[in-house]
Image 1 (cartoon, rainbow, N blue to C red):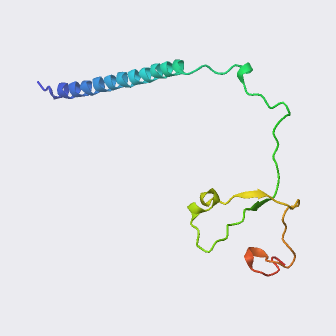
Image 2 (cartoon, one colour):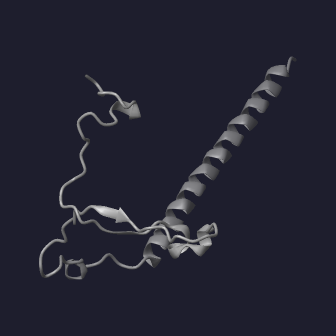
Length: 121
């Protein structure tokens, strides 16, 4: 009697059993992840109510301020200053400018990419 087909069938049965066990493990991990997510969500503070939401200021929304800024002058001295000796520790400070209009290019001045020519003419 030839029993080799029984050995092959038994081997495939073990493979099918392994796949079933792997499937059960994957489902268990997914359920555990869902359960952990629910626990974490319950520990979070509740969402704010509409009464707790921020409100705009009494004077209305804050608007953008447009102004020209001018750099502060570098202090003059006989010795070379390092950044930590300068006001603001090397960060260039600014102050409100005196001019009201926006700076524009002058005709005939430095044009396209600093070429000094007429630009794109």
